[in-house]
Image (cartoon, rainbow over all chains, first blue to last red; front, side, top):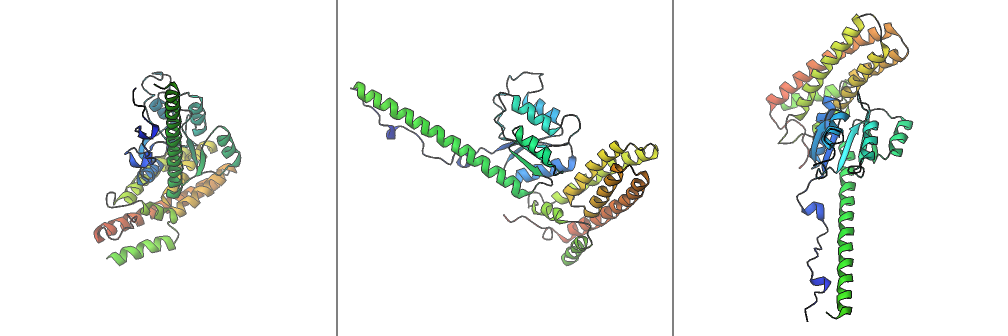
Amino acid sequence: MAEVLRPEMLDISNDTSSLASSQELLHVLAVDDSMVDRKFIERLLRVSSCKVTVVDSATRALQYLGLDGENGSVGFEDLKINLIMTDYSMPGMTGYELLKKIKESSIFREIPVVIMSSENILPRIDRCLEEGAEDFLLKPVKLADVKRLRDSLMKAEERAFKNMMHKRELEANDIYSQLKRAKI
Amino acid sequence: MQRQVALIKQSLFDQGYLDEQFMELEELQDDANPNFVEEVSALYFKDSARLINNIDQALERGSFDFNRLDNYMHQFKGSSTSIGASKVKTECTKFREYCRAGNAEGCLRTFHQLKKEHSTLRKKLEHYFQLARQAGPKETARRPK
């Protein structure tokens, strides 16, 4: 009779500080047409221990994500972006339009999108939040804003990780009881 | 020397040339990035020179495309805000109000003033950064580790 491994003996890691203990940094894609603001947001994010990719337009952001229709989504499923921060007022495609395109994408729609704007216009804020923006930040963005975003993202990632581990544990328990009943 | 640098910086704040945003920028400097504020400043003056040029040309043409002017000024105000250029930002706001009112003369007057403030700030900051470099790295505000 084969020995049935009890779930506790299975190597289910109890290490729940997933993101913190692993070397993975949050990867943020920042979009802004202003040179000065790009430099600023990049620094804010680096100081907050994030990996940063900065682009100067919504079009370039779509290219980076593979959503510009050129390449299809081939090869972009592995692109790991944890957060997109975009300026609202940009020539060509606005941050709002970019937000919509991201939410329409099956690959990227789950990625939180934060809109940044120098103008405190309530209807604008409402529109963005209704379209699924995670948050709306007034410029100039503060370091405290970025840290708050990062912390809430890390918590969300940890929760997702814990849920996954819990689910695995339940599945393992389930298999164990089934095997025990079958007296294998 | 370092005290001199500190005094100059304080006067820039006291006289309203710079606001708290400049301090936020300084908070982002560290040993690995000791010249961050100076770099942002250089970027700002390069970018704003371009905008000033565009606006000058637009105004010289004589036809006042207030939408376009307002657009330029929106960008100008944005970057001025990001660096903490308080007086310049104020002039940008005034200019935009004149744009919305379709007041060409107001725009011209304000733009003249804006260029003055911009030039003054540039000189003062260049002087400040130069002294700060000479005084040594201790003087620039640092983020606590």
